[in-house]
Length: 456
Image 1 (tube, rainbow, N blue to C red):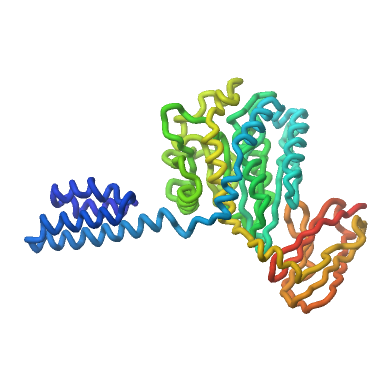
Image 2 (image 1 turned 45 degrees about the horizontal axis):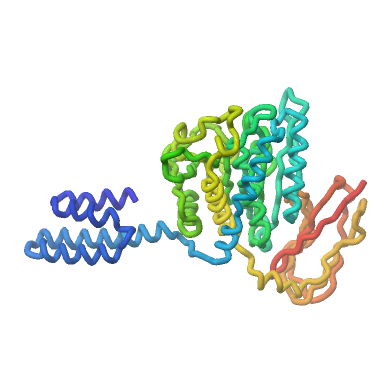
C-alpha cells in the first residue's frame, strides 16, 4: 500500500489540480473503483487534453491508478473466496457459551503452583474431551524449585489426508496469583480457545488441528516452552495465540491487535486480514505497535522459528488495554467488558483455522465404503496385537501408530499400493510403555483413526 501511494504522489504533486483529484478520488479508491475511474477520465479529458505534457501525465496516472485497483483488490481478497461452509462454522461461535465459562473460571483456582489448580485443569480437560476430539491429554513438566506445577492441556483433531501438517490455537489458562480472578488475563483467551475448539471439532479437515491451553505463562512462558520443545520437528503451519482479548476501551472503535514477530513479517497477518474482511465484519484489526519482548506464549513459537500471530485487545501496546491487569478487579463486566470483541476475535481465529486446515468434503468422508472393519485384536493388550482391515478398492495405504500427542511411534505400512482384500498386520508393542495409542489408516480417500490400549 505504501509503495503504490508514494508512486502516485510523484505524479500528483506536479499539479495542484491533480493533487486535489488524488485526495478526492484515489484516496477513496477502494470504495468505488469503477465510478472513480470514470470520473477521472472525464476530468482529465476536460482539463488536460490540450497539452502533450499533461497527456503523458494523464496516461501515466491512469496506469498507476489501474494498477492500484488490481493490487488493492488482490491484497484484500488474497487467495480466499467466501464459502458458506466456513461461514456456517464461524457463525456457530456462541458468545453466551464463552461468557458463562468466563464467569465460572474467574472463581476457580488457576495459579500454576497451587495444587487446587489441578481441579480446574481436570474440569477443562473433561469439557474438551466431551467435544469429541481424537486425543485430549495433560502435558506435564517441571519448574525448578516447585513441587506442584499445573499441566498444559492439549486437544488434537487429526487431519484426514495430511495429518502431519498442523495448525493450532493456544492461550494460557493460568492466573498471576492464587485465586486471582484473571477474567481478561487470561480467562478471555482460555474461553476463546475452548469455543474455537467446540465449533471446529464438528467438521473434518485435511490437516490436523490442535488446541493448547498452557500453564506457567505468568511465571515465564514455561508451559508453552515445554510444548514447543516436545513438538520439535512437527510441521506447524501457524500458531494463533490469544491473550487478553475481552477489554474494549470506551470511546474507541472495536479493534483487536494482531501482532507479528517483526513489523515486516506480515504474510500471515495479511491472510488473517483478508479472512476477517470476508467472514467477520464489524471489527478492525491492527498491529500498530506490538510487544517486542517475551510478553506472551507466542514468543515460545517465534523463538523456535514457528510462524504465528498474537491476538491482544489493543493494537498499541501500552495503550487501550485493561487498566485492571493483575489486580482483583480483573473481573467479568469490569475488566473483561466487551462481549463483541471476544466473540468477533474468536470468529477470526475460527475462520483462519478452518480455512488453513481445509475442510474435508462430506462426500469424501462418506466414501469410506472402500475400507471396512478397521480394528485390532486383542485390545487392550500387553505385548502384541493384530490390526485388521478390509479394502474394497485398490489404494495406496499407510498405517501408522502414534501416541496421544500425535508423535509417530511405528509405521507398519509406508505408502504401499494394496489390492482389494482382507489384511491383518501384526504389531509388536513389547518395548512400548503402557497407555493409550492411536493407529491411523491413510488411503487415497482419507484417514480412519482407532484407539488401542497397551497394559503392562
